[in-house]
Image (cartoon, rainbow, N blue to C red; front, top):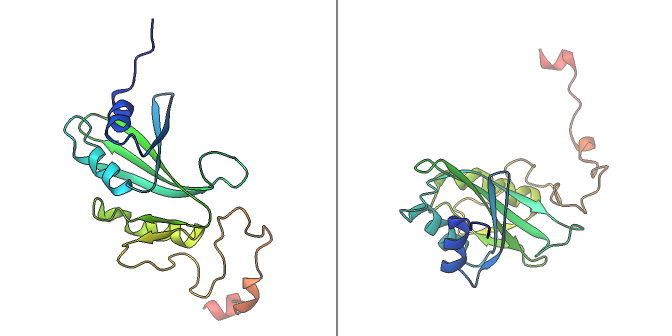
Length: 171
């Protein structure tokens, strides 16, 4: 008997064949890998289509695949949930090294605001059309992006810039 095809994977593959890179399904979790070029269109399709209805973006994060191989070095990963159909979906949008940018999805989910800023701050991936793209975790003068694999494990010596606070000072 042939293996039953996942309808979500098939819908995305058919609608965005030029953007589709691959898909996996393991332990009930579906992951679809796509190019970054039409990420807003792809996610909008997943959100709005009546038979899909992934209304909730639970999270988004960045990934650096420096030595892992794969489609590209970087990815922005979107974790979606359909309240209508009680199913989850992970979308990985791959981003080439040297052109680290992707379009914002704030137009679809306002809650993408701070997670997109975190991806920018930690990985240096520019989020196009973001209304307030600036660092969110690191100081404004921080050099580098701490979650990139080439960032030095021992840090860059920023602790020396700050005054040491003692118990006496804190009272």
